[in-house]
Image (cartoon, rainbow, N blue to C red; front, side, top):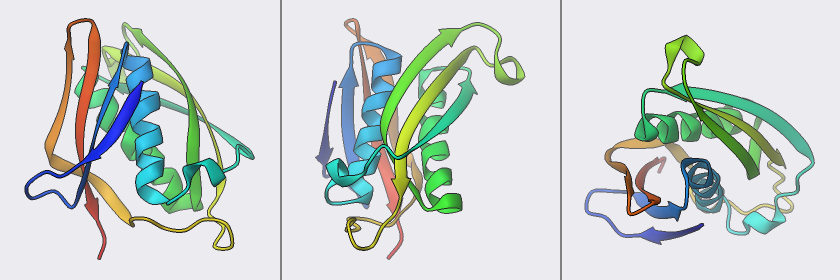
Length: 148
């Protein structure tokens, strides 16, 4: 499981991530999002736990919904989530979704004394956004909308 930040035309910020399975990809994109938010994601302590459940028809939808939920916790609670354990299953789930991810996320409230903001991420951008399964691995390319 790995991620790296990349330059994409028209994207304010973007990253690529790769993992052996869809659950691993969700964990990796979650870590990449944390790294986009703060300069030292290792400084985010696992002081609080949140359980997140997201459902979607396919892998791309599941990745988007998951990232939106992580950002929602940051917006609503000021919570930085940096550690993720994900279980993805197929079958009827939330509102009949074909895939469901049950996530245990750990983190802590943003602390100005310990956390330095890298980017003020507003949302996952509509484009470019790509999630594919090929060759037995999952890959994502995600662009982020950033507040000035």
